[in-house]
Image (cartoon, rainbow, N blue to C red):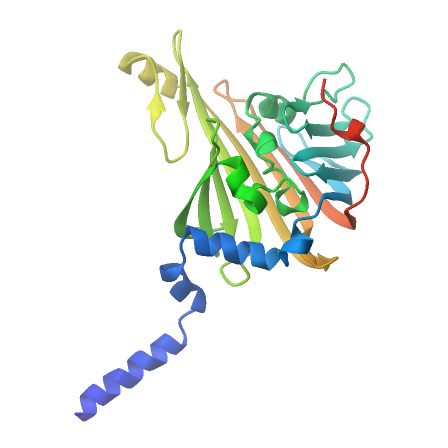
Length: 299
């Protein structure tokens, strides 16, 4: 072997030694591998599949766009099987927070302004309820997390490689519910721990003359004709929900995030924009406790 060839091989080995293991894993990971490793990261089957869970926390509500200010509140997530109730509470004169319920068959979003009307976020989830009915909202904090029993949900999931999100390299998985939705739903996982760290839901709507065009991220547009489509694109409205999960802790053998950040933003065709943020720190997690069925009643 020549000295030049030997030198080149040593250089190659040195380079490989400094390449992140996550980059190697990205070429080998497929949908099944990612799902299995994510479940293992949650904990053993007997602990991750809790019958019920209550997560109590301190919450900070912030208006980021379309106003300003922040206020302290509290959060309570109660879940049992496929049933879910999420309460985000603040004490303001006109606005009292959010309350989302899924009974296992029906979704319900409470009107939490004093006059019983809905916030922009609540109103959006009323029309786009896939995050609730699929058990996605809140991630693995709730027993409704669909990756725990994907077969029952009959959703389609597909691995989409390593993506750069906020300067981090994360595994991306697209989630498509069996029941159609306009939302593009992307789940993101840490490539070293396989913990679920982010979900992003996006949709763009464009109102044309006498028609509505739905344009989902990564998907086609649907309209009644080219003229209507061109008109609609001049009047698009954009909606986005982001969930971020961090500060993982192990409770009763299951590893869950202690920090949950929920953000909603909308940019309407009339120029109005609104962005709000719920920053939640879990203070107590209770697994396998009895829950009153009234928690999950819808109206």
